[in-house]
Length: 620
Image (cartoon, rainbow, N blue to C red):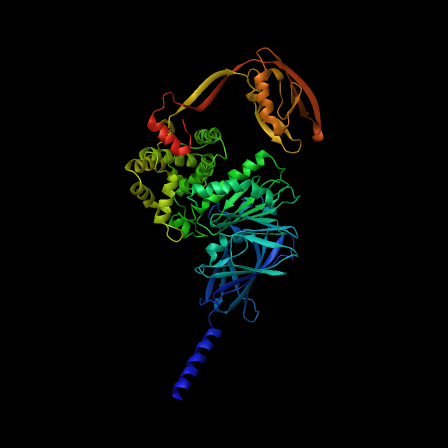
């Protein structure tokens, strides 16, 4: 009898405490059907708090952007309420931070979120793939860091997002915990780090799933004029994804991945397009255009880069990335790894798989080399630049991560192949680093080069410390000689040209535009081009952008010294009107100076052949 009483008391005690256990979940609610002035109201039913005063934050910066955007700028009308619905005192200490008193009584916070894609503020414009887009009954680009805040020191708790949605809308995301209903959906993330790492695209669904090894790859597309479908994107990416699978050893380090595309049919506020990478997804903002070879290759190049971020920084990253501080971010020294290695692998994988010609791969790399020398400080330590990239004086060097950063990885790959007789390269190095570290285990910034040297060769440590940590320019010429390639710094030749001016493209008229005609060479000066002239015909042949390479190739093949050449151009007049002008001159060769040309060395030896074949799959 006594035992039964004790058991009943114990059971009552457990049930009592289960029913009154602490609520440790952020429960957010957003109604996508009520848009006002490009704003949405967000409601947070808060987790239980023990602090009397709490700090509620929005990120100043998020991983992958390398810019301080202060997303709190787009938050307004924030109010806090207690369990009885009474307002609590709230003060704003800076653009991203709110302080709430009597926080133990806090039950609810409400605020409005403005659309970064269509804001009236022209200062510090957010690059669209990292921003928010609110178009009522059309599409919602929900980069979660722009919508949802967090309490300081409470980032590891669960986040539950409830969306009331327009009829027929569906969420696409890299997150897996999703409950789909007719009018509402619930999406759950285990913590704030995973939430910020997971954008959501809400629209009427145009999706397709590809199975790649052990991974389900979702492609989701919003195309305002329905010019580009998910099926088209998937067909464009399928071979690439299988090539990347093979490049990574036959399997991928994630179970699910989402490509989220939001196409636009007008210029973006930032004036740019592109993508932002995440661990399990990538968000793309690109111009909507008809199916062309250019579009297909653009998709492959951009997606290859973003997809390879599943290796860095998802699997391999420093503590600055793994323990990211959203309001006082500390930068890692190793952007050469996160962005440079990723950019290199994106092109290298396509070349090794035969998706692009090897010559095309070399052209891209040499163009990057030229850009790194002419547009950036080639003697600045790359690790110093990376660590201090948020400094306004250093930030202009950031773009070099896609130029010199890729070349650092190229040099590293060739050197590894050379010292290992072709058996070991950056592909294998990334696997070994992934084994040593991983998503949940970050490396120390200062230890990475030593760790790589221990995994490889002393010469690799010397290279990294001298040319990446140090300020000595890359020895690209010496490295390429190891694979039998000669790098010629400057080459002069007499040849035919189109005139020597810079050329752009008018998307409205679909014609090439002559820019900076002051750069015309001796042949081009005959025609007296004016800035803004749009090319219509050469020698009677209509110049269409889709056929421009063939047209120019035929032009060069057919002309001879002294031939009369006719250009027909549309010259802009007032109010958007043009006047057709016929201009003539006579063909003559001019001296053309080219820098950084590469060619195969005569008499390439066996070790060079072996390294070249192992590196790029080129057989001699």
